[in-house]
Length: 302
Image (cartoon, rainbow, N blue to C red; front, side):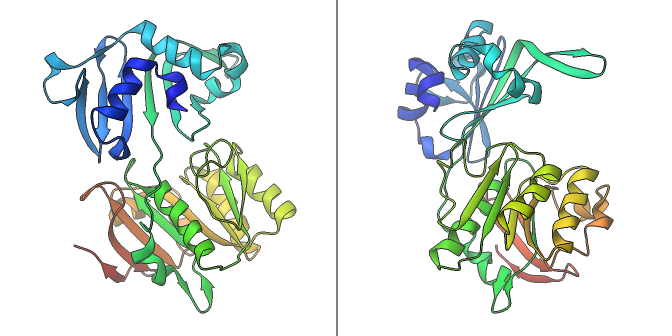
């Protein structure tokens, strides 16, 4: 949890000087002002909370960054080398520390990350009912629709799918849901985040392995996964669809045009029945529209 890794000064500022529930990200860059993203807007972090003047901002030092990573590793950086190779650490509360520094590569293989220069701390928040306005378009008497959630980074995709799974649970729609939680951000490191009572979680697995193993082992009705990217992810999604498993997934794109232009999307477009477009317009999680398989708008919010 952040209280264990940030140190008393920073933790006190972010939890007492402004509404912590609105904090999305905290970025520390060596010898640069600390930046807090609150409701999707960037501010500097000062002694008394959020400030707009750089001269009033706290400066992140190399020692501060190293101390945070040292505490996040439970005082043994060597013990988290596998996580460092991936570039992030997930804390017990579900917060993710993305880390930049120097990659050590030997024979084309990443060996470790050291000389840490910056940290991006992403704060998961449960936003109850954030998927509710779209829910009736994604679930009907025939069941759950294959759905792709679209948004730019930090606009609430993960929060949306977490709430959607919980909405199924609230309604006692007892679908067996398998969450492929590649980065530990959907359910948290040890399922600290609320994903309802019918979800199984496979954490820190790549999608190819997770989809194949999960389908064999857990017999899911629905697979939920975050941030579809490259060719292997697309193959995994198509494999699940061909097995009769419904898919709820997310992808990075700012709008439908960007989505259609993404490499590999043509291989995916026949997989999904619904598309939900999110933005940060009124804060992360703003629903801009729900579309059918032909990209005809079913609903829009203003």
